[in-house]
Image (cartoon, rainbow, N blue to C red; front, top):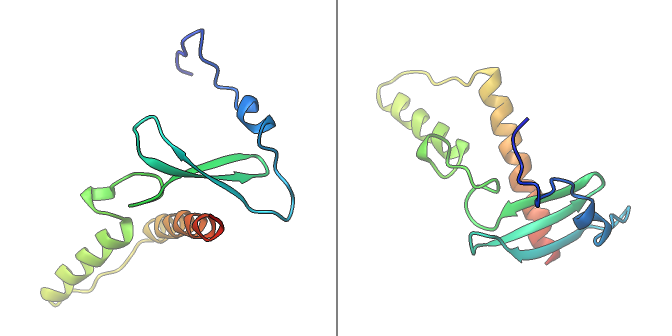
Length: 113
């Protein structure tokens, strides 16, 4: 565990009770994050997904690239330039699938707002 200031709660119920989940409805809102950037929030049955509006939805820059897909595309081009094969490991495929799901959640959210 990690230390949390006593005046701060990690309990999300305060947020969730004011924005209830509704089966069959996609509930999305735009907010301004503490960093001043616009973000999307998608209400799901067990909580909220918060995503960046631009770049990778989770805000990460894997291997200093815009996305894992871009990273692997660059590596594939370099390998092709050397006439080498480029293969993804099962773990890399799983990471790319997870990244794709993040982009899909953002796509659904942007379609609603």
